[in-house]
Amino acid sequence: MKTHVAATGLLLRTQRITLGYALTVLGALALVAALIGVLSVCLGSTKIGIAQLFGHGESARIAHDVLFNLRLPRTLAAFAVGGLLGLAGALMQVLLRNPLADPYILGTSGGAGVGALTVLLLFGSSVWMSVGAGLGALGAIALVFALARGDGSWTQARLLLTGVAVAAFCGALTSLLLSLAPDGILRGMIFWLLGDLSGADWHAAAIVLLLALLCLLPFARDLNVLALGPQQAHSLGVNVPRVRAAIYLGTAFAVAVSVTTAGMIGFIGLLVPHSLRLLFGNDQRLLLPASALGGGIVLMLADLLSRILIAPQQLPVGVVTAALGAPFFLLLLQRGGR
Image (cartoon, rainbow, N blue to C red):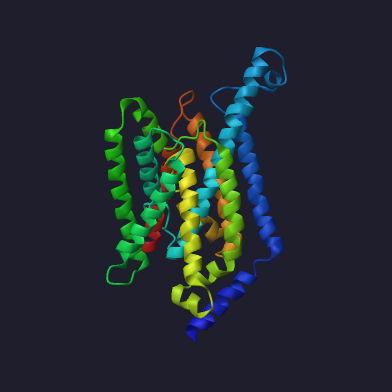
């Protein structure tokens, strides 16, 4: 009876998210994303003036190349990859019912990185890196849940600790693969692992982000009920195995594409969904697209900082996201302890 009352209360709270409110929130996030995107395209280590852009000759050609062939594709890639990571983090937090869940912390990103590097070393080509990353991400998720079951049941704390252990194991495998890598590709592999958006192709990440949202939004109501727990969700008619399979596949695919596009970028999936949940509530109909927009905003901002902090040199964008996300993670741990 108490479970039914709690579930009914949750459903009533989710119904308060009206279409107008959702469009207002998403419109505001889209406006912020557009502003950050314009700043990312306009600012960088090379200063470009309006007169230079609309002028003639060699300087105008250089300005056009920098803006539209270098910065704009990089900005779009940052938005798409950040959106995938934010969406994956929101899904993991619903599945585990834990605000500390994140593809990076739980080893999913590490598994994708191990799979991508293994394919790169074995075949010497980046063509099949997406396949390797996808298999690695799925393998990491399956390993976390298999090890966390223990005596046949699992708790959120056990899953989180198991994920941390799997992430450490993936880190050890990554170090092994780097030690076996030829010198010719070692530097590129290290920079890619730290997060690299230079030369990233944004098309695949953008298409996958759009498809993921279109495929997952129909499950948003079921995700709201799943947040109560699998048993309660099953008693309310939710097909829990189907929803879990959608989360597994959606998370693995999103992480795989993000890793192959931009390397290992952490804490986006932790920082963005949890912050948006505190601001706008836990209705997945709003939280999923908002997490995609918020992830794009954060990664575009991190990429901009990586290009201007020590210009003309560039920092790996994963270093910037870690510097932003690690204090936030510690703050969550401290609040959870209290």
